Length: 351
Image (tube, rainbow, N blue to C red; front, top):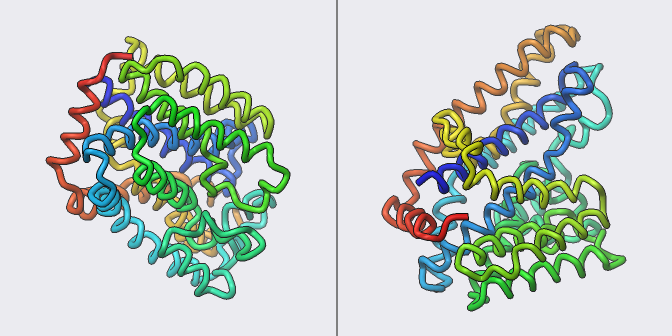
């Protein structure tokens, strides 16, 4: 059980990291503190690697049948997503939360939009169908983050589910190398910028890491190291930050089987892992709502706002995520099937 628990714990840590990365730019936290949490995109890339590992086992559990596989994914993800999306739209319609925060620098505007996009309905349709990551930037600018910022990665994940569910790879290691090659080709193409980072080929190297890890666990051991090296090289072609996820993924694999990784099995960390999906989604609308409320009340005092905003945002996000997990997410899951997938993962050889 330890190996699976540690992956769950890592998922919780990543969700909290992303949440802090969104919240700190709105405060007057010291620059060195904020710099520690400026790699939220790299943390999401690690989510993709975790997804590649787990979804490979999930698809196998369903015998490669696409329809029950994708329906199980929909039951797990969509109810919470639609609830949070509706809340995010309602909160965004209340106005610009940054208008009362004169100390906030320009980069924070990349995280907090001033208002709902216009025209609104194309963006809503794109989000409802999870197609917002497939739309070229010129067709609907920034559609991947306009209504619910964190949901851009959900569109990427959905593209991956459809791809692996339709192909149903017989040799997981070769499929991982093919996905890695797709990512390499995409990053080398001169017109890759026509799409957002939510387009699956952009994240393909990180999914390949997870797939190669799943193949390694099944005895197909020739692909993990090439995928680690290849993903790191692809990352260096774009920016130094993109090379962090492959290196961090190697550390996660080590922590998954070494005594020093036992901290990932701490009860608090495991709890964060259990609620990590709704926690990842709700942090942005919660931060926006708290900012709308606190901004006028603190009368432009950056110190007062920061002292209240951060603990209030974190605590509210945790409470709402727990309510969504136990009240919505778990109700739509099939406990027997999910436990079967976990048991299947646990039966694999130790890393």
